[in-house]
Amino acid sequence: MDDDNKMSYFCLGLGLGVAVGVLFAPKSGVETRQLLRSKADEGVDYVKRRSDDLRETAAEALDRGKQTVSRHRDNLAAAVDAGKQAYREAVNNPVTD
Image (cartoon, rainbow, N blue to C red; front, side, top):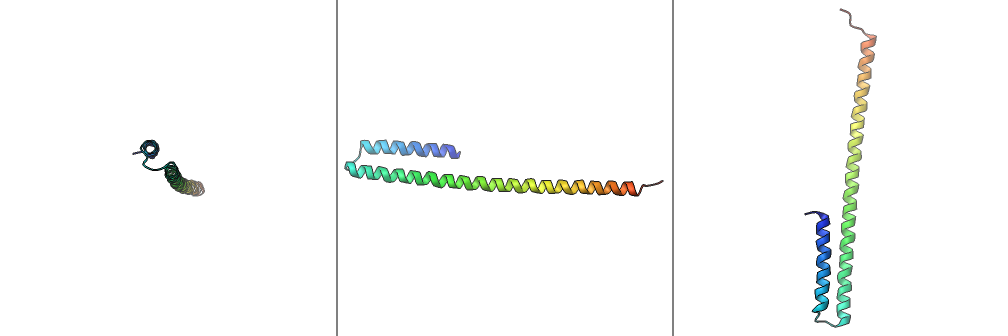
């Protein structure tokens, strides 16, 4: 399941839970508001944790990508240098039959 879908279902469930809770609240208005506030704070904390996790995952993927590009660049530079060296050797030491 996609992270976006999980977040959507979480928000939908949170909203429905709040709506049902307000309609059938066995508590006083003050208690219900406190409960809603605490649940909203939990939701905010969850979103912050998820965004931090996603940011960290994106940073790790970016670092891996940079390392891969660097490794390929180094391999390409080594291949070009080897080709230049082979050309110099072929020009300086011609094969005569």
